[in-house]
Image 1: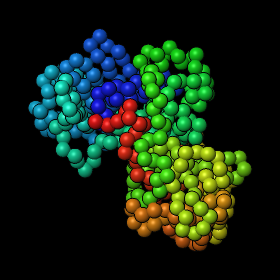
Image 2 (image 1 turned 90 degrees about the vertical axis):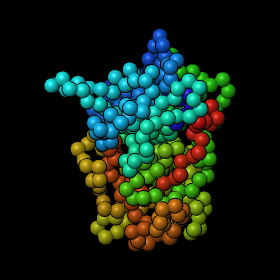
Image 3 (image 1 turned 60 degrees about the horizontal axis):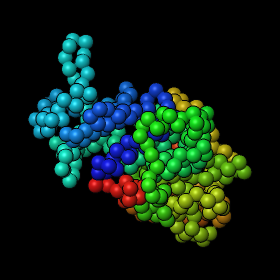
Length: 376
């Protein structure tokens, strides 16, 4: 979790993004007489940051990670008394008058503390999903606001999101890339109300050590952004592949078998263009344009949308991406052959449109968005 100044800047940036592209479930940032508060809530998840002179509180609730009554009682017994009144935001009253908690995780930092405190030991199912936008927001999209679902992804929008998160000055181009229906003048007052402001000095867009990092194998059932890729057609039969977690492009580093496949800043060159091929009728066929279904199409998370298998062929070499046997091993270019290790599926993910489900990922950078948002 970032330290307090960086956390508040992150909160303002998230609220500014929601102000540019509002929806039913958006980040709200309120400046109160005694502090500041960020919140977002829907039927399945909620997240809040409450900052004041007596300390800072971060809480989250995930319907899949709900706490039982015994754990809540133990948590409250170890919670700072001065912050206890703020926990009322996480309670709900049932029809019979009983009170129940919408709380999966909580942490706090009191004035003078050098680190965050939490009464919870890491469990088997930590609620990192709901905390993702605070801990390491994806330039491909944000997790919790409806308007930033993966079905709205693309390179231009990811670049604009990166710039807002990196505290760059807002421009007409940035606003239009995030929300084509609004211009800078339309959102200026709402963004200003969040307190979002440009950094006094230029903050790097690159998230730490991401540039040039290889694609490596991850678990096939990985639920993080590491195994999510957005395929953007170039209009000429090829696709660029947007890496969800970094906003960068998949890049092939050579034209010989064994060449590495890495993430790089998007440049539109041939090394970042790929053919998508699907396996049907006993052979591989080029997909000239992968079209996403309408948002919230009634498909299960794991339902495949077309053929049983797809593969990715580099434009400048004709070689395909080969996936290794074990997590942590690199993805390399290989001669095409009938081999399941060269195959992938395309499926719905959390109801957010078509994303490629490859058994690969890129390890996250260490320090997101430069020194102004260094972790503490």
